[in-house]
Length: 182
View 1 (cartoon, rainbow, N blue to C red):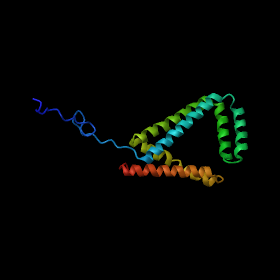
View 2 (view 1 turned 90 degrees about the vertical axis):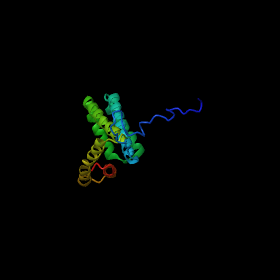
View 3 (view 1 turned 135 degrees about the horizontal axis):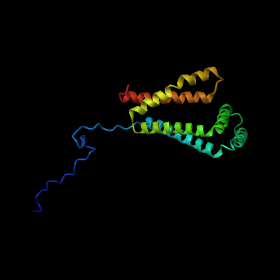
View 4 (view 1 turned 45 degrees about the horizontal axis):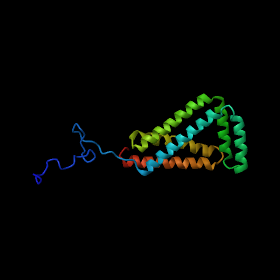
């Protein structure tokens, strides 16, 4: 009896190797996002986290924001001089406005962060809608950024943002083309 073969010696077929589900339909193999798309997803996640940090700062300091901004501006100028001075002044003006209407700004910041996290999740999970969301979301701002580079005094920071956005649109577009989405 010891030499008789057993009928169930082979391992059960795994669902990974078997392209059929329980009902017998063929499953599409799950594709994974490329490394470049994962990098864009991480960038989106970082933007969302940055927005949430800004929301926490606004919520924590909205009553003392004017004093805090004065201190931060003096510290920035002492350490960096006029490096990114126009951007820093713009952030100060927005923060002053945000301190006056801080509940509304908190809501807007949370909505923005939610969109960034949603896009990051979709890109990481290789969802078609996230590719479209990304290419349209970045692509729509490129003409506006070009306009501001031409109409306003030249700014290296704005040029860097424009180049980064063009790069992201190209990366997402190439992945969409590779996946047959366009």
